[in-house]
Length: 209
Length: 278
Image (tube, rainbow over all chains, first blue to last red; front, top):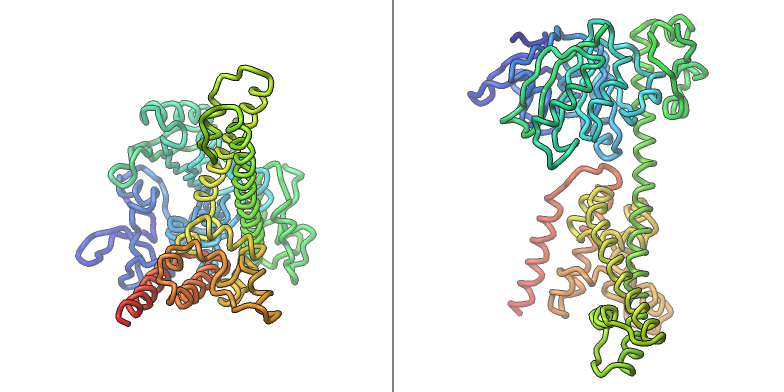
């Protein structure tokens, strides 16, 4: 699987790892200007490691739902175009703001991803939606935000089984979520994100026309 | 074509006071806002639009986060005060139950445990039922206090991670409550934090009729209570100093700084060893 432009496999202390070029965010190692992208701390990183058919070239406009403290959003903003980062909780948003302040085209929005009408006046149509929200109703969030995706756009979604139902079998949860998604998305690829993230499914989809 | 308006309409491009527009604005669907902003003259070109959007979103998020977190510290203040009210009222009512209960049954006892016993008894008269119901209220208030404590333990680390870790969540909440908020606590001097909760003793001292208090509510911390009385003043001063720093880090940056705690551990160790060697 090819990586988007701006993402490379680089050597860190003799170990191959994904990397992007940009200002440092936490304590991640940097070699020759390339920051290590740790798949254990990033679901998108884990999707790339698993070779999911992401279809990204680099430079795309991105809407990132559930940006948290901005670890993954920082890497995405390093290789993508203008990146809108939505996060609902104040504490992680404070870190996200610092990540955004070091970058030219990462826009932090303290908003609820379940209410797209509260940010549709700021966010333009995008080529990529990345979703990593750990709330119940993850499929509904993806459906509500479909309107931001351009015709051939891609949804990169990390589904956390335990957010839907802690007791249910993860596979059953994933089936449920996928079934709901298929009403308006065509699922192109999917894979469990172990060993990087337990009970998570990575999924690539495109809007149904 | 949508008739929605973008965040920038009505915003002065030279001033960018856009918080209200970004926070409270809505649209039914997204649109090519960069193009529209250029067409309407808000921005010279796409790059200029993104520069303005960047400034506006970062500034808005900063202010909104600060405001939301301030609101959170007030929730913590309410919770810890409610917990104290529940505990105090439970104890007061438990005394009444013990006194009354002792006059009706042969067993005697006190506190919430005794109230729990009474609450479980089968009443055999109207007055007995009154007593039993009162005892039940004591038990229920006590349970409420326990649940409030559990919530505080979960919530305080979100509001003030460093302070909660160093002081323990409940003491952290008390310090915030006594100062009136995290912001006020962050702006307090270490000397003030040391005697928070000992205001009566402090004012008696200032009037000249008492020695200065060595500690207020931070007395409940193991580092004060567990230190030999001769060195408690030093321990309280050291603890108050680090708690003040923790509150400042929590208010102004919010990042975890475990080294603050390590420094405090070392300092207390030194104070206590000094005690032993004398």
